[in-house]
Structures are given as structure tokens and as C-alpha cells.
Image 1 (cartoon, helix red, strand yellow):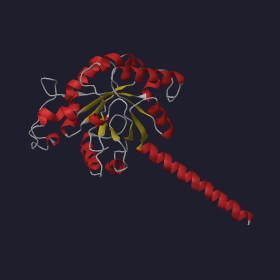
Image 2 (spheres, helix red, strand yellow):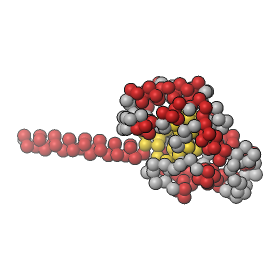
Image 3 (cartoon, helix red, strand yellow):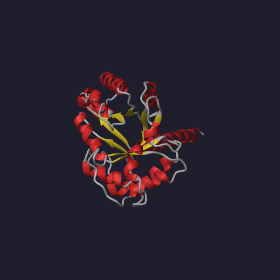
Length: 266
């Protein structure tokens, strides 16, 4: 991405690929940021990333030659955690398991200073360069991107109302939890689940917002992009590592077997 914030790049009709990072390793974040990927997500909900580690991940991402926006998915939608993440310099937040407009409204309020919201003020934080950025209080919202995640049929049905909440910049569909809530745990490709995802995307676009989803692998990711989804997590660091390690071991095992077979024949 060319120096733009995620908020500037994430718009209707964009096609932004992302990596989902859960290894809790800043080195993995640094490697991912240097790949040319459009965005990264640091997961705190289903990975043991804690608050003290996030700053190191942000520094690792910033060390790459190109600027890569970093989203942090919070462990839960919580006011105090929101404040602390914003204070250390997180610009892009994903709030998990948002069910309705009221929950979305609360989440947005935690990201804004009074009178627009409820975020507490600290004068010397990493986000304002430890007090050196004297314009931070008036400029911070311009680069801030608030993403809410819908993960149940109820939440999908409430997308029209959620989309109307001022400050919601994008909506991300969680196919794993959505499929489980629909009685198809582990099978997000079930026709009923896919139909619900298409309905969700349609409602998100009707409201003029960009939609996001997880779609690991080239084929699923391409299909979601072709369906008009604007930002897709095309792989995760743990997923890639396990998949590539398994494939290489299997390939070498087959190679060894073939070689032994040939030797026996000789």
C-alpha cells in the first residue's frame, strides 16, 4: 500500500488482501509487512497476543520498506482495552461479535474523545508521539478506522441498522462463527452459510460500506473478491506455516520412498 491509511484505501470497490497474524511473533509481522500485502491483522481474540506485545508488532510492521496498515482485533469489545490500544498507536480496530446497532454505537464512542465519545485523555502517549504531536486531539479521527465484525444470523439481520451508526467504517463477516451459529460448525462453505454471507455483503454494500471476510487460500479468496468483497484475509501466519511445512515433509517423504524404490530395483 502506498503510504495511505487503511481508511483512505478501504472503500467500495477496492480489492485489498490481508494476512491474519496469530503467532505472537514480531518477526513474523515484520516478514509479512515486507511481502507487499495490503494489510495485516493482529489477533488478540483467538491468539495469545497481549497488550504489551502489540507495540512491538507495530514497530515491526513499520520497519518494512512499504507502509502496511495494521488492524488489531480486540480480545473482546471493551472500553478500557479500546483506550489502551489507541493510546499505544493502533489506528485500525476490529470489534468482534457486534450484534446490533447499540453495540456498534458503544464501540465507536470508545474511540472518540468527548464530546463525540467517551475516550479518556492522556497527554503523553505513543499515539501522540509522547506529547510532541500537539494537534493529535483534533486530527486523530481522520486516520482512525473502526471495523465491526458480524458473526451470527442475528448480527447479519441487523446490518442495515449497524451500518447507519456514524463512525462505523467497514463491516467484517466472521464465517467460522456464522456457520457454527447456523448449525454448520466447521463448514463455512455450506450453501446456507454462503447464502447468508451473500445477503450480508449485499446489505453492507447497500449502506455504502466496504465488506471484509476471511478466505484462506487463493481459490476462496479470489471467489470472495469476485463476489465484490473489498478486503479479504487470504492467509494466516500459523495456517501458512503448518500448510507449507506439511506439504514439504510430504513431498520429501514421497521423494525418499521413490528413491528407495529405485535403489531396490537396481
